[in-house]
Image 1 (tube, rainbow, N blue to C red):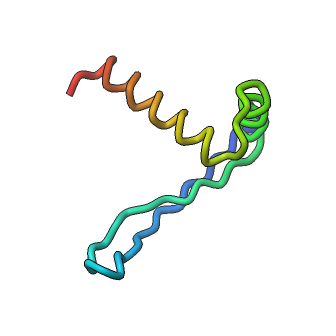
Image 2: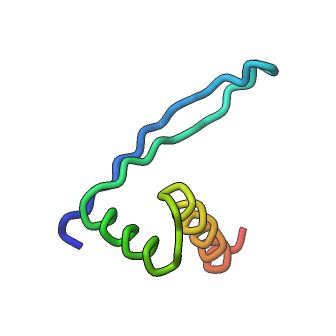
Image 3: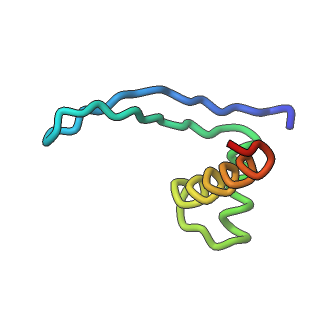
Length: 70
């Protein structure tokens, strides 16, 4: 992929009830990565980017743990 662009912005949110700070990220998808996600969404029936990203992240974590036992 020559037109790769994935911008990740780090954020922190505060839980109003507990005051606990929670790390969060915002992912901005563009270029060929967006095109690939669009194809996956169409072929696999995903309705939106958060749904497909959730599965990609969890599958990636599982594969990473298999290859790099903790």
